[in-house]
Image 1: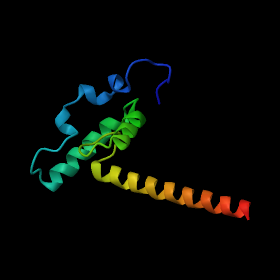
Image 2 (image 1 turned 120 degrees about the vertical axis):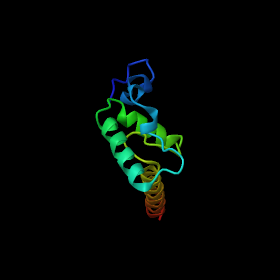
Image 3 (image 1 turned 90 degrees about the horizontal axis):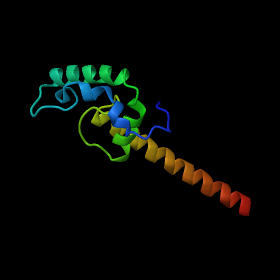
Length: 104
């Protein structure tokens, strides 16, 4: 993760800025085998990126509906977001239950 005192936007340090954008975004009607191969190649680029975490969080917060961002495909990001929503609900329920127990 980068030094938080850096004033430059995170994406200025992204390794993908030097790679072909087509690696990270699917062309229309891409065959499944080609998509999987391209996504794995994009993930290898992400794996060596110093701002991968910032990129991933950006894609999750936006949310970015297409492409490989922060080493995750759009489908993988949907899973992460679903897990976060489920965790947040569980935490709210636990806090509510603890509040009721403390009041009772």
